[in-house]
Length: 123
Image 1 (cartoon, rainbow, N blue to C red):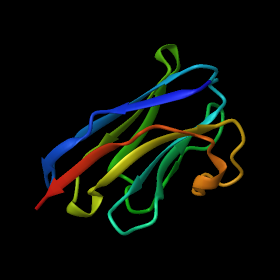
Image 2: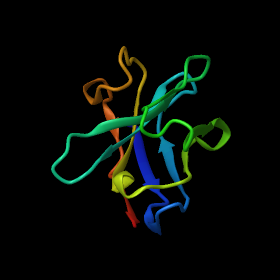
Image 3: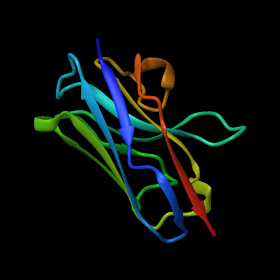
Image 4: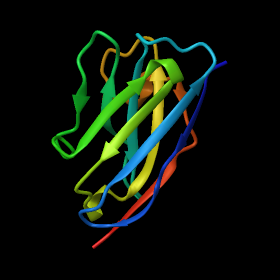
């Protein structure tokens, strides 16, 4: 059974930084595609960034150049470094994983999810 546990959320002012972490337990592998999604109140959940060992790393246009996704395979940890945060980045952030993901932006392809961590950016 795969479990994902996020941490690192919080409240920051615009322009600040946060680093989110997602620890995976159970049978996950470096080649699995892992991703960060976010969901703001009243909005659909959207893909933020995604990676898989040996494959392309993806970012949403809205975070490109500000966010960096990375994975520490030795510690089964997925990270999201978020810099130059904006109020529109305010959302619940979720970690997701799955071995087979034909379209990284579509949440329906991820069978494993964390419980989420809240990020709030004030102006």
